[in-house]
Image (cartoon, rainbow, N blue to C red; front, side, top):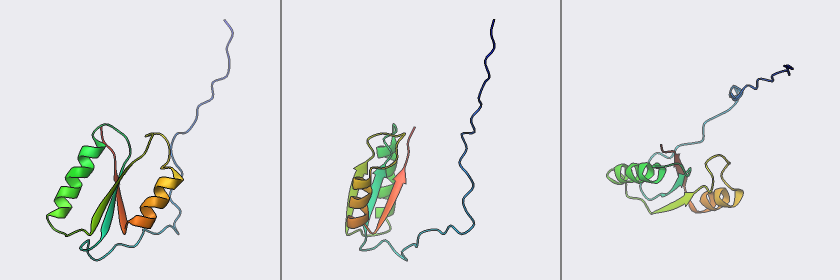
Length: 97
């Protein structure tokens, strides 16, 4: 039996740099266009719809834009991200399972 070396990879992400900042938050969602980005996992759309309903009980949105990533394991396509950025005041993303 021959033995071959085994390479172990570290799947963790590097720590967030100290200089990273959170995006600004609007003081209210009233009159805002919100984006909902589904990551394409099972139940993500249902989860985001429940989030939308809960927020709609407290705020009056100007509109809602929904988008779905084509693949859970890939980043959001640039075109989708640009569309959401152009049309929405803020975007909420969520995942299911």
